[in-house]
Length: 81
Image 1 (cartoon, rainbow, N blue to C red):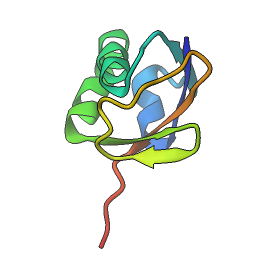
Image 2: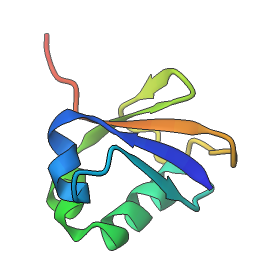
Image 3: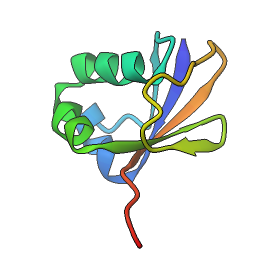
């Protein structure tokens, strides 16, 4: 299972849990399974989130592979300019 750390404003949508474990092989599968397990996250995921996998941040890395020992941080989408 992949360890997922939920950051900041996303935590209320997981029942306050900061750390989750989800079975997934890539980012798209991870986000789909998170939305199924925590329906309150679905609108947040639809708006977009940033995902950091083992310290590397991806904005649209849907097909980035995940290893069982991967640590994923789920963050509100980073914007700016």
